[in-house]
Length: 395
Ligand SMILES: *Cc1c(COP(=O)(O)O)cnc(C)c1O
Image 1 (cartoon, rainbow, N blue to C red):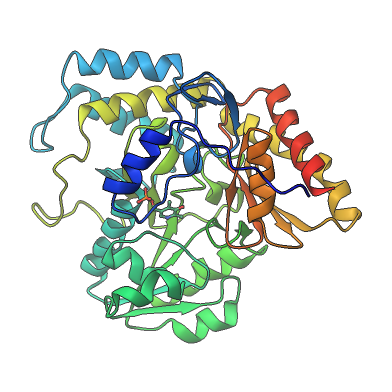
Image 2 (cartoon, rainbow, N blue to C red; image 1 turned 180 degrees about the horizontal axis):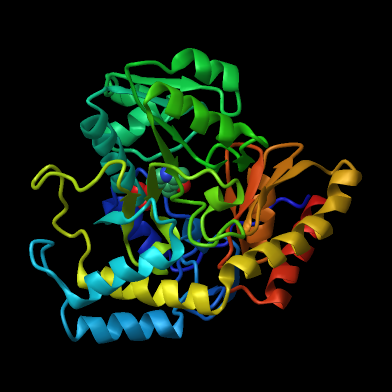
């Protein structure tokens, strides 16, 4: 593999971000000023193919005309409105979200990020059960606030911030025996990703979620699915849990929910019932601007069957990447739909750098997994180009 020459454009912007940004995320060597569909453009008009969608957030691609129109129109009507007044757009979104959810999930707490949706789910689980224990999975990722971080097992995220919230335990994802041993009368909830994202794109083993559901029911614990990354058509069904038929008591959503606009949602149903007034809240949560973007996103996803599209494009990738596995060039290709993890034999960083040189944006999940979360709207030709370049770099 050729050693990458650093690409540096817009050094003044990068210098400003390095000097005055918080420093917890270092900006890469490229600055982008515009996006269109699955492409991002630099100041001088160089195009990059985006197979990351900013961690799946830009689910409909960049500057989707229907998102642009919905946001512009709503911005001219009403941007800010506290949840203590009802609103036409928020009400319509709450109704429309029901069309893609099972009847047992008929309420949503609207917030502004995946972390907040997890935080709400944890608080609701404790409040509703009167218990304090939470069991989450090793290799799981749920966010970086003190509660969601307590649910995240990875020591590098946790250790600098100890002590975290008490009551959290971690078991191996997929290990029924370990969960059976850990769960008990103190357990308020079991919190899992249906497919672990940051932890390396690792689907739940067949039959595991069914057993988890049984263990929760037998012990009076709630089941929380974190679908912040897997939700909204990403994995080939509207929500990843639908492929298993196992319905959770609480569902945490975020990332692609509003086509790029910041939003999260914690969904639950009659088993929990309405929260008591004042028990939780969010100043920005359910603001009309985000709700307008979320409505447009939902409409496009349903009309254009982006769940089916994700399944089809994912299948193309899996077939086309299989020869790399057969030839021993990569260890494994995992995931579902347009959530794909390619486990490399060595470190993934130089692979991503070489793809960047070829103007393809990808993600990592850990040290040796190349992760793809392209816009669900990526053209077939663009998707094939991404796969061609990956094949070229990994061969
Ligand atoms: C990204 C992510 C989060 C955190 O979402 P933020 O919007 O970054 O707060 C939580 N859980 C999962 C599974 C995620 O992928």
